[in-house]
Image (cartoon, rainbow, N blue to C red; front, top):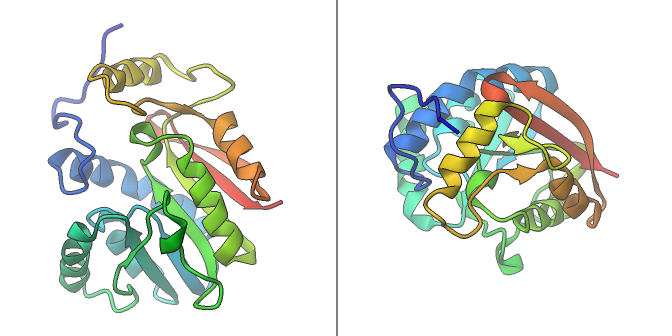
Length: 219
């Protein structure tokens, strides 16, 4: 199956400071922002998981001056980059990044510290195991407000099938390096993992470039 690769796209590299991640972030940030303008609360605190270089959180923050944003990542190497981007954008509503490793419960935030009105994660699962959804759901169960939500953005299969030929081709490209856990995941597998921790899939939003926004909330 041939892959129709945009001519300006760098080679796939999931490292948060790679040219590919920056390219992908610039490509998807405005469609994501459009959805967030619809669903984010008027005020409160929003947690980003797997913030990477902080491209998304620092792009979104100026559009929501009444919200505060908490970036996080498992890799402390990116924290200075997040703070640098915050300073460049003048984002006074972005907190210092915190360490959250979704595979290490000892790093997860506590409700006694803060509750979050929304949690979001962008383009994680094509290079991460489905089991990461267990961590996301458990973090949500701990610190999400009663009416809060979790937004997970990216390309996914649905009920075992690709939704477009381009997603099938993209998956083959991701799988080609034969890196463990790389590849498109199925929405239903994420849903089952979340349900185990009393977090339910509430809505699937079709997004440009054959992506989805999965919106989860308390069951």
